[in-house]
Image (cartoon, helix red, strand yellow):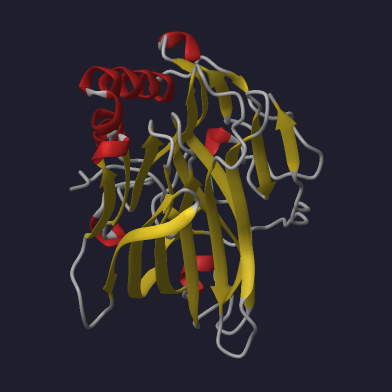
Length: 358
C-alpha cells in the first residue's frame, strides 16, 4: 500500500561538540499506533465515513503498521484518500529513516460533495541512558539532552479557475513530542505546526506555529503549470531539521512520545488539497485521476514531486526572533538515539505564530 520511504525520524540526538565521542542509548520498549479517517459531506451535512487503525506493542502486532481510508463519489467526481505507515526504527539504517510515512488527497469537482480527513501516527519509545553514554555522569543525576526531528514533505492547496472563495479549505501537519518520567509530570518538549488555509479572493495563507523552524520551508504558486488551475499553492520542506531540548535521569527509563498528524478539508466545485510526508504520490494520483482524469493526475503529481525534489520557491516565512532554528549543519546527522549531555544549554525559544497572506 505505502512503499517504505523516509519522512520523519524521531529522536536523533546531536552532540554539543562534533569532536565528542558518542554512545548509544538502549531502546527498552517500543509501541506505536496509526489511524486514518475520512468524512464525506453532502450539502454541508456529514454522511459517509471510512476509517482504519492498527497498533503495535511489545506483546502484540507486527511492523510496519499500514492503514488506508478512502471514499469516492463517482457521480459528483469527488474522491478522498488518506494513508499512514509506521516502520520499525530499530531495523532501519541511518538517520531520517522510513519511520513515519503519510499521504492525503481530497478533491471534488461537483457542487455538493466535500471531505475532511486526518491521519495520525504515535510512537511511544522507552529509552535508558547509562552513565558511560552521558560522559560519566553518575546514576540518578539529571542530564540535558537535545533531540532532533526530521520532517520531509509537501503541502498543497489547489483550485479550479472558476473558483474565487477558498474559505474553509485547509491542510496542515503537526508534530508533538512529550517526555515522560516516573514521578514527574509529562512535559511537552516540542510542538510545531505548518499549514495552508484558503480565504476569499483567491487568498491562501501560510501559517507556522509553535517551535517549528522557518528556515528551509519554501513556498511557490505553481498554477501556471496547469491551465485548469487558478491556484496551486505549495509549501515544501525537504529535509527540515528540528532540534529540541529535554532532560533525562541517568540509569532511569524515559518515555518519549511522538505524535505526527495530518489534517485537511476541501470544498466542492474544484477545490482540493494534498499532503505528502515521505511517501510517494500514489494517493494524489489516485484522487486526481478519479476526479479529473489520469493525465491531469500525472501532471499534478509530477509538478509537486519536482518542486519537492528541487524547490524553486521563495522562503515562506521570515526569520522570527525567538524561534528555534536548526543547529549548525557541520556536525552532521547522527543515528537514532546517539547521545551526549549538552555542556551548554540555551533557553527554549518562545512559541511564535506567524501568519502571512500570499
